[in-house]
Image (tube, rainbow, N blue to C red; front, side, top):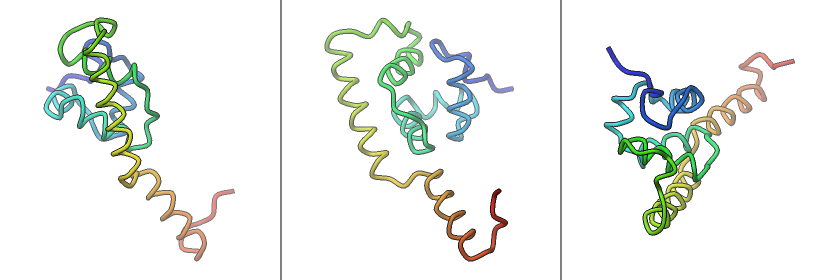
Amino acid sequence: MSEPVSTIRNLGPASEAEYANAGIKSAEQLRALGADAAYLMYLQSGGVPHFIGYYALVMGLQGRPWNDCQGKEKADLRKTFDALKKQAKASPSKEKGRLELEAALNLIGVVKRKA
């Protein structure tokens, strides 16, 4: 039986829902992906970038409290976070693609228009 994402330190029900939206359904899957790949998936699924959320994930996967991140380690994580945001912005979002497809189908009358 798999463990919920919220069993990872620093991650609660809101994080669990956000990662599930990105296709990450278990703590085991999140651990296997690692912080960077998981956070990139979160961003690509339409998640809003938030530095504290990113480093709380990194710290949690290491079994550390979120506020344990300081100094050079925090500065290095900020560089990685900025690179992940840039990478996510350059790659197509699943949500954006779905919305664009839905708009095109609505335009030609294939999908019933929403009221």
